[in-house]
Image (cartoon, rainbow, N blue to C red):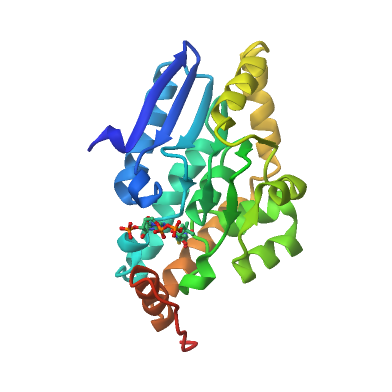
Length: 260
Ligand code: CAA
């Protein structure tokens, strides 16, 4: 397993920068990337890292989603498993015993937006674009989007964003509360490091417990919601519309759905 799919940089004793590193595929998440990220979260924990900054390699994308070429031919069972594995890694970020800041430097779509939303704070570059484009591929969000987006922006706005697959720019993400801050292009990691320094000056145990307390309002029904999401994500892969939606993306053409 190559760790170079996700780069690890120790910024200081307590702060690490993790960079999803598949820029040619706009950092799309395949099983190997998810595994590499999972391994690095273990390393961060073992090394006592208190703040993780998560970003994407290259100027164009944070993460443009789960890898469509890796998903296109999945069976329903395999797709449900893929959703559950992705959710598990994102859950590790959400419950990491320290602060995780997403520095979104471009596209954060589908699994990429879900990855950002699993972080505690999102700092967006001016060129950031957020969206849940899955229904355009004949599937639904599968890495927690149907659950975490609702919690972040409210149920009606989440419906609109998921049903329309609309891509939003950084100012709207700020207005909706998806992004905490918008900074100039190229400056997201720098700003995230400044936030990390501020938080790093506070009581580390208190910060950790405050995170746990804030997260506790998400627990309970979140697990049930995630389970339902993975099951329904898997069901999409029994449909011709999933075959068509993903084949159309990979063939660089518009999808023609048959409602089945
Ligand atoms: N999976 C696999 N490959 C991807 C990808 C993805 N999610 N996103 C981009 N790529 C690849 C492209 O196929 C392309 O590869 P080639 O150079 O080999 O052709 C390369 O990255 C560059 O992408 P584009 O040429 O498409 O770049 P662009 O600037 O014209 O468009 C974009 C950028 C709008 C982000 C476009 O790439 C795009 O729409 N990507 C797909 C976004 C998406 O639908 N994400 C959701 C995936 S489903 C999901 O995530 C399910 C879930 O919840 C678990």
